[in-house]
Image (cartoon, rainbow, N blue to C red; front, side, top):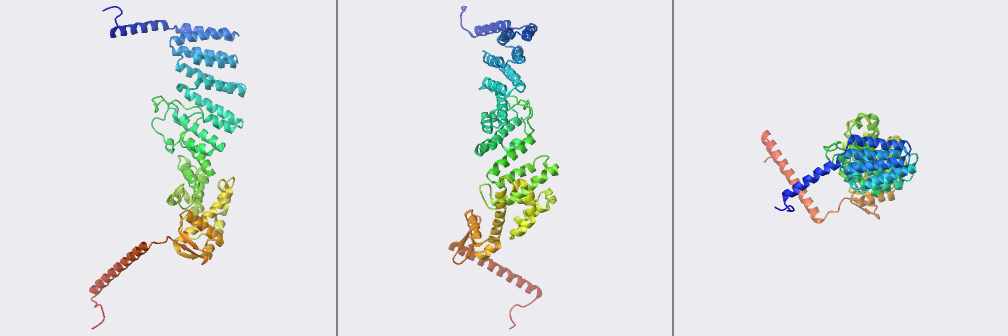
Length: 493
């Protein structure tokens, strides 16, 4: 075999030799390296920042070539520290960019000095300096998956600064640049908190469509504790889940915050059924029912919004959904402590006419006391909707008992003028809540679906069948009693 022959064994021998030579060349004397770093730092303390940085950069190169993570971190940390202590922001930013762009720079090292630089932000003297350093770090972390969490935290800090300045629109746009739902290593609580902050800023910006899109990224099931959510466990991408940033609320607190934001969103569209569902989820959250000062106001709002929701099928839900919600709410144990609100629910479930004057006298003080519902930006509309729901309840009740009724009598039952009664009836007909026709010349309202001849004949046939069955059953019973008592049926001969 010739010297230059290409064989598998030769390849392995060459690789082993190269690895041994690399280890010999890349070996570092750690003690000497630490001493050199300390000496370079001392130069900076003596006022010679330029020589100190030159020495530290040379040491960083040695550690990087040797692929020594610990030594590289120490050198980079020293570079940033001397710039920070010298209060030279320009040098600090330049060396952050320089260290990140160096050939073969280790990922762990970049992550370490980025986090170190992030700790300097709050200590800077003015907002301009803070924003400048944040943008430098954003430039360094852009496109690097291993520092995506750090980039998200920087963006959140920048958005908070913009919001503090009163620039809500820019803060919302800034925070939306990051899609944290794709981050495999970020803690679940931090992800949820980040998305909720995006939703909050969109609502503050009055961008309700984008707020809904962002809110859909969070499933209500996300607030249930699951395996793989804890720090150090393996995430969906095979990476270890990192610890959440300082100040991130617990999962239970995030759940309450989520539903409060959803209430704000649904209030804009007057979606009373959805608002009621949100308050119901808050009421059923862990720890809420232990404190009467918390569950009391929440349960009252559930009652009011359940009453405000239309009792017929809409895009939000069917009539059975509203009925089930009212029935479930009335069955809560704590409703015994709220007798007036329990009476409110039963008022709308009983098929009886509700006089608005009596209703207002009974529940008017509670309406005035419920400032969060019936006062403020939407208060006037909700008071009008409450009266409308009473009218709709009365109309649905009338439809259960009447097939024909005069317009004057209908208006009397509804406490409305004939024109108003006809208008409300027309709205329910359009909503397919009732089926009715108005004969204006005759002043008569016909309620019920018009039957086809086949349906009428089938109904007549079914009724005749029931009648004959009853006659046959009665005949059998009479004959049985006659036999028992030995009574002769029919007249005497």
